[in-house]
Amino acid sequence: MRSTFMKIARTGASFAFVLGVAAFATGCDSAYGSCESPCAPCAPKPVCAPEPTCCPPPACAPASEHCGAMPAGAVCGEAWCCVFIPPVYSTVTEKVCTQPESCREEWVPPVYETRQKQVCTCPEQTRTIPIPAVYNTVEDCIEVCPSRCEWQRVDCGTAGATTGEKGECFALVTIPATYEKRQRQVCVTPEACRTEVIPAVYATETEQVQVACGYSKKIPIPAIYEDRCSQVCNQQGRWEWQKNTACAVQVPVANNPCAPATK
Image (tube, rainbow, N blue to C red; front, side):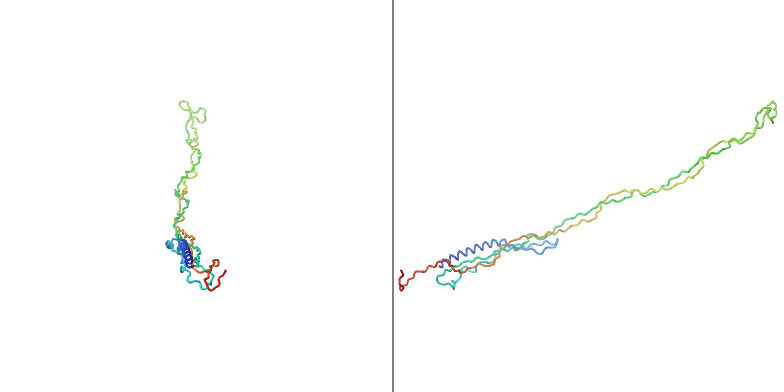
């Protein structure tokens, strides 16, 4: 009977060891690290807490490797087995920071506009323009030779004639004045001058004008999290006595010389 109990105990211990190793392996994937509170944009870069070295899950091994004293309530004819009750685990999922919040700088170039403006290439000027005099042509009758009296030969029968020594006759004849038509220029409008304004000359020029300055923009990069699972022991493994009703208990042959022999 005791050897049977020892076999059961050894089997349960091996089972507990296998479960413990499996739980240990599963616990290696547990995420114990966590991020600090989110960093302010472009503040010093926060660091996620380092993940600790893999440790076995919480102790779920039995307090002892045997069931202890025989069950007190056992009666004759019953079979009791020392059975290992394995620990109970549950899987817990938690968020783990794999990359802390950070920020990057991005250069925003300045903004320019194309504008046009008027540039004076020649200022306003004045000049004096002469205005010639205006003349009209006037026709005048000019006496070129005044009237006069002169002796002219005449016939003798001419009245008032005198007889000369040679029988010639002369008369004192009035010669009328001689006139000619001549033209002359008469000033109607005297010479003058006027002032003329020459307007300024402008040209259109194109230039680039900066309307917004370039600046460095802070762009926050959020932290990256991932789900990681870990095994949590909800109930420790234990050894306990359990009644085995399927086990037939052999009754030793009675050796009582006082009892009549049975046929």
